[in-house]
Every structure is written in C-alpha cells, then in structure tokens.
Image 1 (tube, rainbow, N blue to C red):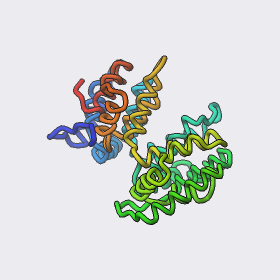
Image 2 (image 1 turned 90 degrees about the vertical axis):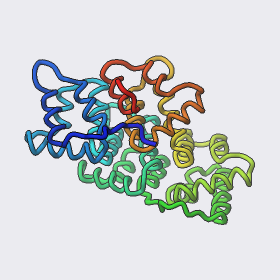
Image 3 (image 1 turned 90 degrees about the horizontal axis):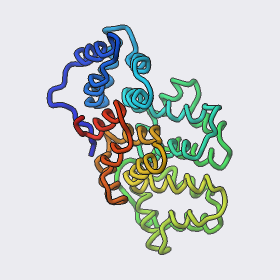
Image 4 (image 1 turned 30 degrees about the vertical axis):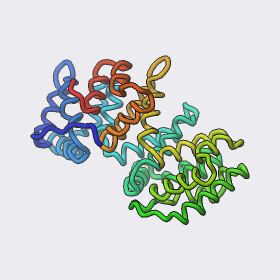
Length: 321
C-alpha cells in the first residue's frame, strides 16, 4: 500500500551520505541526486543515512538540506528526512506556537490526523519527541493554546492509547452508538461520553459503532453531527476525526483534492499528505481519490506543481522522473 520504490540494490548509508555531500558542493546543488537518494529510501534507511552523514562529516544532514535547498522543495525534503515522530511533533508545535498566524481550523486538523490515523505506538513516540524537543508536553501546549471546547477534544485525542487489534464487541457498539446519539440530540458535542468513546476505543471498535449508529438511526453519525448546532469548529473537528477513524484514505484524498483545487496550490497541505502516507497507504489514497473525483490523483497533482518540488513528489508517488 506504500508508494515509494526502494531499489533492489541500495548503496550503504556511507555511500548515500557521500552522494548527498557531493550534491551540496560547488556552485550549485545537485537536486536530482538528493531526490534519487532520499526519495527512494524507507524510514530506517533514511535514519541510517542521517547517522552516517553526521559521523562522517560532523554535520547535521537536515541542517545542510535546509541551507542548500529552498522553497516548497526544501520543506518537502526536510519533512521526509525527519524521523516520522519528530516530524509530527514539529508540525504540531509550529501550529501551536506560531504567534504570527491565527490557529486556524485548517491547521488544527493536523492534530486530528496524527491522533486518529497513526498507530498508538507512533502517537506515543510523537509525544515523547515533543517533550524532548520543546521541554513541554504536547497535551499541555494544546490546553494552553486553544479555547476550552477545542482543547478538551484535542487533548483527549492526542493522549489516547488505543487497543490496536481488530477485536470488536457488537453489544458495546450498540450501547455506545446510543450514547453518541443522545449527546448529539442534546446538542452536547463536547459531552464526556463523546470524548470518552472517540478518544479511547480502538479504531475497529469505533468502526463497528459507526455501523451500528447507521443501522439503528438510519443516518450516519457524520450527518447527525453536521446538523447539530453549536460550536462550528468543534463540529468540524469531530467530523474530521470520524472520517479519519473510519476511512483515513478518504480523508487524505480530500486533503490532496482541497490542496490543488481553486486558485493556487496549498503546497504545505499537499506535502503533508504525501509525506505522511507514502510509506503507509498512499496507494489506497490514490484509489479513493479516483473513486471520489473520477480522475487520477497523480495527474491532478503533477499538473498543479512544477520544478524540483514536482520531481520529488512524483518520486514519493512511486513514479520515475
């Protein structure tokens, strides 16, 4: 389900480090070499390259990438080069600590993505990385940076540790579907029952609950939440969490679509979606994109971007440049 293509024969980390160091030398930068090396290495291989580069040259690879590259290409390569947990911790911190920009709903969606579409162990790694990098807990910074209804919901999601196996209980699903229905009917989207259920149950159990909800009330929970008055931002984040839990590939297909629709391209959102899912389920995202929009995701993306940034994104999509 991943899209990146790792060659059958991969050079050693030392050889890759040498190739990258050579790419930085001289009057210009060899962007093609950087794409060829980093764009075709998996997470563990990239980590070993960073370690080797530091050992051989006494320099931080990410620092050199940031210095030698520019624009959206630089942002994409740097995000890809980071350890995934550190990458996500830095993304969230940037959102919470950027005083120049309003903490928009669009930015806050990153916290929902990380909390609801990654594994429990990855989320713990993100929280550990956050503490190590910023001398503060992720939960503490969410709580101190956002208004109460949103903070309460996002702290619940970010601090969860869900059971990961596919065991489900139909009776629990029916009971908790009723609890969710009651909270929505009472217009209490921040009710403890809602937060408890969405923030603690396994992904598989929640999917069973969503099925029970539709069966018993002849409407999806997403539709019921959509029609519930109250805090519009909380309602939107709840809907996003439900989609991320139920079908994450549809969520990321929508992120890609939204990033390239209309006037201009939201490169940050596009980069985040491709980088986050290239080693997980980007093949499924590609299929959902076609089902939802009746067009090729790859063609839609590559028709909207250009230059080295385009070549790098194409490489992560598994195509040859």
